Image: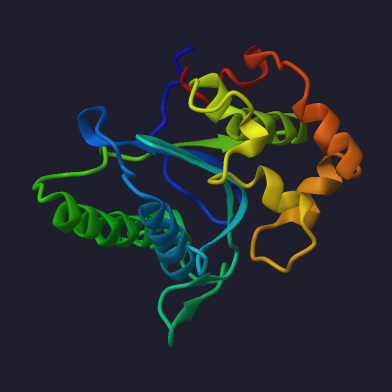
Length: 209
Protein backbone atom coordinates (compact mmCIF):
# COMPACT_ATOMS: atom_id res chain seq x y z
CA UNK A 1 0.00 0.00 0.00
CA UNK A 2 1.50 3.33 -0.94
CA UNK A 3 0.61 6.37 1.09
CA UNK A 4 1.12 9.72 -0.61
CA UNK A 5 2.21 13.14 0.64
CA UNK A 6 4.10 11.75 3.61
CA UNK A 7 6.18 14.96 3.83
CA UNK A 8 3.29 17.11 5.06
CA UNK A 9 4.04 20.04 7.40
CA UNK A 10 3.73 19.22 11.09
CA UNK A 11 1.16 21.45 12.80
CA UNK A 12 0.24 21.91 16.49
CA UNK A 13 -2.37 19.88 18.34
CA UNK A 14 -2.63 17.06 15.78
CA UNK A 15 -1.99 13.31 15.78
CA UNK A 16 0.67 11.90 13.46
CA UNK A 17 2.03 8.52 12.48
CA UNK A 18 5.77 9.14 12.22
CA UNK A 19 8.25 6.56 10.99
CA UNK A 20 11.70 6.33 9.51
CA UNK A 21 14.31 3.73 8.63
CA UNK A 22 18.05 3.48 8.31
CA UNK A 23 19.63 4.95 5.19
CA UNK A 24 19.94 2.20 2.57
CA UNK A 25 17.98 0.06 5.05
CA UNK A 26 20.98 -0.12 7.38
CA UNK A 27 20.44 -0.92 11.04
CA UNK A 28 19.65 1.87 13.47
CA UNK A 29 20.21 -0.31 16.54
CA UNK A 30 23.03 -2.76 17.25
CA UNK A 31 22.85 -3.28 21.02
CA UNK A 32 20.34 -2.92 23.83
CA UNK A 33 22.25 0.20 24.88
CA UNK A 34 21.42 1.75 21.50
CA UNK A 35 17.67 1.33 22.07
CA UNK A 36 18.01 2.79 25.56
CA UNK A 37 20.03 5.76 24.28
CA UNK A 38 17.43 6.39 21.56
CA UNK A 39 14.68 6.55 24.18
CA UNK A 40 16.74 8.81 26.47
CA UNK A 41 17.46 11.27 23.67
CA UNK A 42 13.84 11.07 22.57
CA UNK A 43 12.71 12.07 26.08
CA UNK A 44 15.20 14.92 26.22
CA UNK A 45 14.67 16.42 22.77
CA UNK A 46 11.16 15.42 21.66
CA UNK A 47 9.06 15.21 24.83
CA UNK A 48 9.03 19.04 25.08
CA UNK A 49 7.21 19.36 21.73
CA UNK A 50 5.01 16.28 21.48
CA UNK A 51 3.10 13.61 23.42
CA UNK A 52 3.73 9.94 22.68
CA UNK A 53 0.91 7.38 22.54
CA UNK A 54 2.65 4.35 21.03
CA UNK A 55 6.05 3.39 19.67
CA UNK A 56 8.03 0.47 18.34
CA UNK A 57 11.77 0.42 17.66
CA UNK A 58 12.99 -2.26 15.26
CA UNK A 59 16.54 -3.00 14.10
CA UNK A 60 16.36 -0.86 10.96
CA UNK A 61 13.28 1.34 11.46
CA UNK A 62 10.84 2.74 14.00
CA UNK A 63 7.19 3.81 14.32
CA UNK A 64 5.62 6.48 16.52
CA UNK A 65 2.08 7.62 17.23
CA UNK A 66 2.32 11.14 18.60
CA UNK A 67 0.34 14.30 19.13
CA UNK A 68 2.03 17.65 18.77
CA UNK A 69 1.57 20.00 21.68
CA UNK A 70 -0.52 23.16 21.43
CA UNK A 71 1.98 24.99 23.60
CA UNK A 72 5.32 24.30 21.97
CA UNK A 73 8.42 24.81 24.10
CA UNK A 74 11.14 26.16 21.84
CA UNK A 75 13.89 26.08 24.45
CA UNK A 76 14.31 25.80 28.20
CA UNK A 77 13.68 29.52 28.55
CA UNK A 78 11.42 30.34 25.62
CA UNK A 79 7.87 29.24 24.85
CA UNK A 80 5.48 30.09 22.05
CA UNK A 81 1.74 29.74 22.41
CA UNK A 82 -0.82 28.97 19.68
CA UNK A 83 -1.93 32.62 19.77
CA UNK A 84 1.40 33.63 18.28
CA UNK A 85 2.34 33.21 14.63
CA UNK A 86 1.16 29.75 13.45
CA UNK A 87 3.80 27.02 13.50
CA UNK A 88 3.47 26.25 9.81
CA UNK A 89 4.27 29.87 8.90
CA UNK A 90 7.40 30.12 11.01
CA UNK A 91 10.74 29.90 9.26
CA UNK A 92 11.76 27.02 11.54
CA UNK A 93 9.07 24.57 12.61
CA UNK A 94 9.85 23.75 16.29
CA UNK A 95 8.75 20.12 15.98
CA UNK A 96 10.72 19.50 12.79
CA UNK A 97 13.70 21.26 14.35
CA UNK A 98 13.46 19.02 17.44
CA UNK A 99 13.42 15.91 15.21
CA UNK A 100 16.41 17.23 13.28
CA UNK A 101 18.37 17.69 16.50
CA UNK A 102 17.28 14.27 17.72
CA UNK A 103 18.32 12.47 14.52
CA UNK A 104 21.65 14.31 14.49
CA UNK A 105 22.46 13.47 18.12
CA UNK A 106 21.57 9.81 17.71
CA UNK A 107 23.37 9.50 14.36
CA UNK A 108 26.57 10.95 15.78
CA UNK A 109 26.60 8.37 18.57
CA UNK A 110 26.01 5.43 16.21
CA UNK A 111 28.57 6.69 13.70
CA UNK A 112 31.21 6.79 16.42
CA UNK A 113 30.21 3.36 17.74
CA UNK A 114 30.15 1.71 14.30
CA UNK A 115 33.03 3.72 12.85
CA UNK A 116 30.83 4.81 9.99
CA UNK A 117 30.24 8.13 8.24
CA UNK A 118 27.35 9.73 6.44
CA UNK A 119 23.63 9.90 7.05
CA UNK A 120 22.16 7.23 9.32
CA UNK A 121 18.47 7.98 8.69
CA UNK A 122 16.54 8.34 5.45
CA UNK A 123 15.48 11.89 4.67
CA UNK A 124 12.94 13.27 5.13
CA UNK A 125 11.37 11.35 7.99
CA UNK A 126 7.86 10.14 7.09
CA UNK A 127 4.74 11.55 8.75
CA UNK A 128 1.04 11.40 8.06
CA UNK A 129 -1.81 12.92 10.02
CA UNK A 130 -4.19 10.57 11.85
CA UNK A 131 -7.69 12.00 11.64
CA UNK A 132 -10.07 9.47 13.18
CA UNK A 133 -10.43 7.61 16.48
CA UNK A 134 -10.83 4.37 14.54
CA UNK A 135 -7.46 4.94 12.91
CA UNK A 136 -5.87 5.73 16.27
CA UNK A 137 -6.77 2.39 17.85
CA UNK A 138 -5.96 0.43 14.68
CA UNK A 139 -2.63 2.20 14.34
CA UNK A 140 -1.71 1.28 17.93
CA UNK A 141 -2.27 -2.38 16.98
CA UNK A 142 -0.26 -1.98 13.77
CA UNK A 143 2.69 -0.36 15.54
CA UNK A 144 2.82 -2.91 18.36
CA UNK A 145 2.59 -5.96 16.11
CA UNK A 146 5.43 -4.87 13.81
CA UNK A 147 8.04 -7.19 15.41
CA UNK A 148 5.86 -10.20 14.61
CA UNK A 149 4.92 -8.93 11.16
CA UNK A 150 8.60 -8.58 10.28
CA UNK A 151 9.41 -12.00 11.81
CA UNK A 152 11.68 -10.48 14.47
CA UNK A 153 9.68 -12.15 17.24
CA UNK A 154 7.19 -15.00 17.18
CA UNK A 155 5.07 -13.10 19.69
CA UNK A 156 5.12 -9.30 19.57
CA UNK A 157 4.01 -9.20 23.22
CA UNK A 158 7.48 -10.35 24.24
CA UNK A 159 9.29 -7.63 22.31
CA UNK A 160 11.03 -5.26 24.75
CA UNK A 161 11.30 -2.15 22.57
CA UNK A 162 7.66 -1.24 22.03
CA UNK A 163 5.03 0.43 24.17
CA UNK A 164 2.66 -2.56 24.19
CA UNK A 165 3.54 -3.84 27.67
CA UNK A 166 4.40 -0.39 29.04
CA UNK A 167 0.83 0.75 28.43
CA UNK A 168 -0.45 -2.09 30.61
CA UNK A 169 1.79 -1.23 33.56
CA UNK A 170 0.69 1.21 36.26
CA UNK A 171 4.17 2.65 36.63
CA UNK A 172 4.20 6.45 36.06
CA UNK A 173 5.41 7.40 32.61
CA UNK A 174 5.27 10.24 30.10
CA UNK A 175 3.71 7.75 27.69
CA UNK A 176 0.03 8.69 27.30
CA UNK A 177 -1.14 5.23 28.31
CA UNK A 178 -4.30 6.26 30.15
CA UNK A 179 -5.53 8.00 27.02
CA UNK A 180 -4.65 4.97 24.88
CA UNK A 181 -6.56 2.62 27.19
CA UNK A 182 -9.60 4.90 26.95
CA UNK A 183 -9.65 4.30 23.19
CA UNK A 184 -10.09 0.59 24.00
CA UNK A 185 -12.34 1.23 27.06
CA UNK A 186 -10.13 -0.85 29.40
CA UNK A 187 -7.04 -3.08 29.62
CA UNK A 188 -8.95 -6.25 28.82
CA UNK A 189 -10.26 -4.85 25.54
CA UNK A 190 -6.79 -3.49 24.76
CA UNK A 191 -5.27 -6.96 25.14
CA UNK A 192 -8.10 -8.67 23.23
CA UNK A 193 -7.93 -6.21 20.36
CA UNK A 194 -4.22 -6.91 19.96
CA UNK A 195 -4.99 -10.63 19.54
CA UNK A 196 -7.10 -9.91 16.46
CA UNK A 197 -5.99 -9.69 12.84
CA UNK A 198 -6.68 -6.17 11.58
CA UNK A 199 -7.55 -5.03 8.08
CA UNK A 200 -4.72 -2.75 6.94
CA UNK A 201 -7.12 -1.10 4.49
CA UNK A 202 -8.27 0.94 7.48
CA UNK A 203 -4.77 2.45 7.57
CA UNK A 204 -4.09 2.83 3.85
CA UNK A 205 -3.91 6.63 4.20
CA UNK A 206 -1.39 6.64 7.04
CA UNK A 207 1.05 3.78 6.42
CA UNK A 208 3.31 2.41 3.71
CA UNK A 209 3.42 -1.39 3.50
